[in-house]
Length: 78
Image (cartoon, rainbow, N blue to C red; front, top):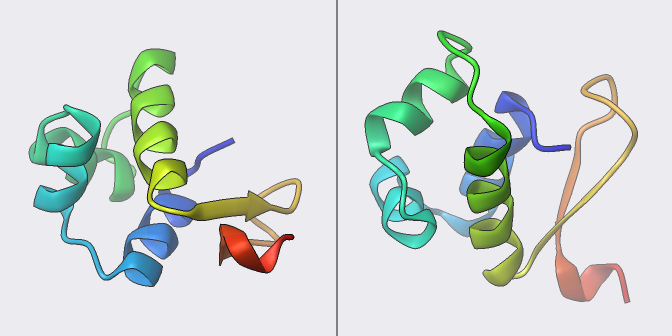
């Protein structure tokens, strides 16, 4: 599941700004900022859009929870 911390880590790996993730996901950059800063929850559709955009760019997620944040370029999983 995409969490605020994982979202930030994935953006860092890709060197994407929130604005770039907004373009790629079809969401508003302010919504992404509020999510990452844990100022508001987002619905399942927004999580799916964010996850889809990050995975399409080659990011993969591992680990069961935020105690273990693992974000890698997908080719490293193969």
